[in-house]
Image (cartoon, rainbow, N blue to C red; front, top):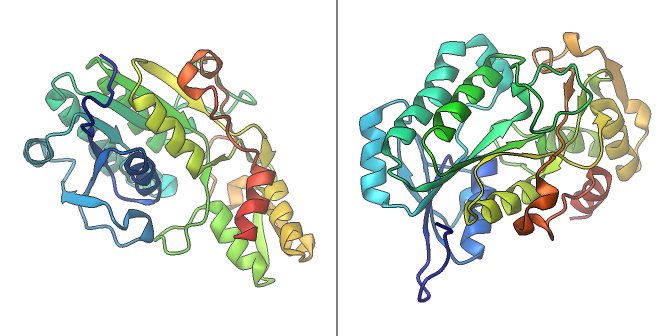
Amino acid sequence: MTLRHLDGTRLRVLVIGAGYLAGHIGRRLAGLGHAVTLSSRHRPTGSGARGLAWLPVDIVRRGSVQALLETARPDALVIAHGPSDITWCEANPEQAAAAHHGGARHLAELLDGRRAVLISTDNVFPGRAASCGESQPTEPANAYGRAKLAAEDTLLASGNVLVLRVSLVYGWDRDGLRPNFFTTCALKLSAAEPVAVPDDHWNSPVLVDDVAAWSSALLVSEHTGVVHLGGPRRLTRLTWARHIAQSYGVDPALVSPAPQQSTGYACRPRNACLHSERAGSLPELATLAPMDVFEATARLIAL
């Protein structure tokens, strides 16, 4: 059944997660009139979660998840919890699996027909193709991709679930514990500090606001299965970082190339890019075309 406002009643939406992306999704949903609660193991400290309700949960414990659902009594859920540090997950695969797959298993057992959207990743693909659509066979590139794919399979099997796979998410995250690529480069380059980034690692970056918009629109739809969201431009991190430098009016030579394998991105797929074979046919997304990364970079720097 499609979720909708009935007699002016707001939907109760539980967002599993309280980090950068979860906070943006929560604020988008709240702006649309829904009653939003974030949930995570620790109370959020970032500005992105400001003004939103919060409840604690330990996603690896079924009893904690059950208690959360009994307290929040959500009509629908967005699942956007961590850990999302891909390098950390590679070093700690069992903990990554416990959080992502184990948490998904608990949620699937307790959803009881509720609508849910899981935010997933381009790391479920090996990176051999320049870009992957929904029909491309999965073959995770790393422990994070394996954990997320297992979570996808578990939740999709439960019924009323849609998986939104997103490419590299960016935006201003000045107070985050692990700022995204744009924020890290922008802060360094605006101070004329050098950065070294891969010249052989490709992404299709997507603005965090676009992820929030698509998540919110798809949550109140009847669509299930998998949908991809990648930005319209495929580029290397080197090209992007040099564009950021130019946008600040500093020397692009401050950005030096480095082989992917010599950086913290070594365990990522070489091509971490997504495109969608479905989105064009979904009316809920008709007015939500993702912004080009160069245009969005200019707007973010102008803020």
